[in-house]
Structure formats: C-alpha cells, structure tokens
Image (cartoon, rainbow, N blue to C red; front, side):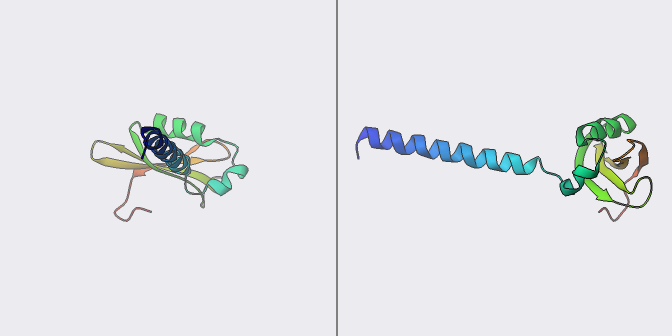
Length: 108
C-alpha cells in the first residue's frame, strides 16, 4: 500500500471514531422520562439548579417522571455528597422542592 492510501485509511478511521463518540455523547445527555419534557414548565437545567441549591453535591442520576404529589410531574435527582446520596424531587410545573431526603435502601 502506498503512504497516501495508509494516510487516507487513518484519516477515515479517526473521522469514524469522532462520529461514533459524538453519537454516544448525544445519547448520554438524554435522561429517563425525556418524552415527558414537553409537559414540563420548568426545564431540566433549571430543575438541576433548584435541586443543587436544596442539596449541594454531584448529581448521579436524574429523571422526569409522573408521580403523586405536587403537579404529578416531577424531576427526581440523586445527589451524592461524600458517602451519602440524597433524593431531591422538583415539581416540573412549579419548580417547588417536593422531596429532599436520604435515598432509601431500595433506590429506584
């Protein structure tokens, strides 16, 4: 094979790798319950900020779900600080904190 052919193969492999990584990055930004986002008045970004204000730490899991209490549509965040994981629920319509408690023994 010529040096030019090898360079083209390497360039194509790098381009394919970049496309694959971009596709996984898009999927990684999705969250459970994203289909419900059209009904929410509070954005995921705003709900994150509200949850982190209620309990600072690192968000390890997030979802938008239908659940009793408040408007019936809530963002649920697992926020880890040290060895403790706190579950913080934020109403997706009003932005009110509905739950702020240590995660139970049987997490969702």
